[in-house]
Image (cartoon, rainbow, N blue to C red; front, side, top):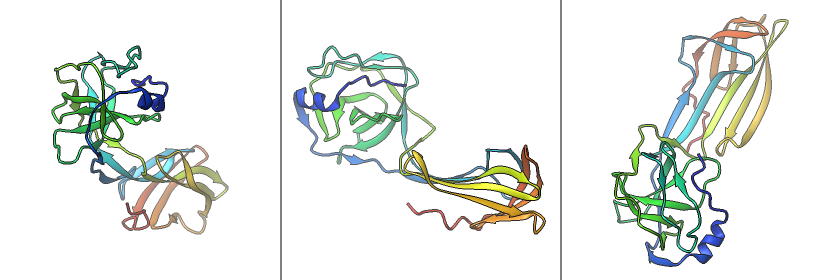
Length: 239
């Protein structure tokens, strides 16, 4: 995406002239949801390097998308700064101003999240426009009066999610090999990794934590299996 091309937010905060102050902002509520890449008692085939099992807990927030290409108004004293919104760019509803139901602060999705927001109304029209992370509104030009955003049906996944995977690593003789990995904090890096092995001569049922998997066929190319039980995944972290 890349709609924000502001070189220095700190410089912006120093230079900008404040015309109003909202006092404070508060995070928008999030919804927790669990995702799984399998259904119990359903045949499935994966290749080496693919997850046999993948479970995730994600925090979800409302998302808004840009309806049309749009050149935003200038940002206070940074009048020469080009800030362009492209049709389809996605923003997450991350904050609101208390006691003001028509105030939603949205921020662009992606790895480079800036501490500056666009202040909009629930109907997708721009309300106050650019807004800083402390709730203040800088001097700026007029925004379009048209509806610039629409609320997306696909919610945004936010940070502090959790993901666990059992990765198929192939077979040596009758020993099936796999890797268990856990990710957290927006999946920047694995939080925990463990190699595991199973002797298929002893049993064609392999297990890890509460997950039990029946191996139907395993080769050095792929694995066919059925997840027969996961015990309700009681070991997943609580958020």
